[in-house]
Image 1: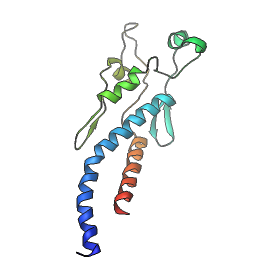
Image 2: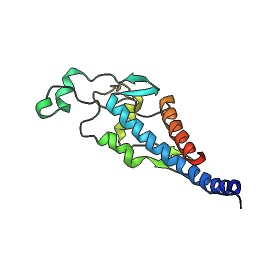
Image 3: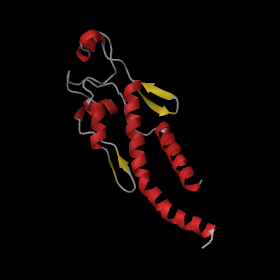
Length: 153
């Protein structure tokens, strides 16, 4: 067997392995994307373009801070970090897709800007964490390009 034939055989075994890794890569990038949106207090709709989350009312600032930071505004939607981390535990992937989910009922309320319970009829401002985004698509595409170079180079 010559070098060309060996290269073809190698690719025949490596490409299916790469394809099986794709949903895992998308899951990791998506979770990093969610965490970055929390850190940056906004949803990145396109590379470098972020829809900033609406600030909390001043009267609620003290509820979300402790100790020396009392009265200062900390990262939006992060009191304990459970909401941010809930995406890590709930997100699943199959051979062909990734489903980003959170069992926290208020995750959808914040992400989509839905009606909330207090006061009755109150609509939560949308503070989107996950959803269609060309920025996320680009992140995944960059990872796939790197993986492709590792295989073909």
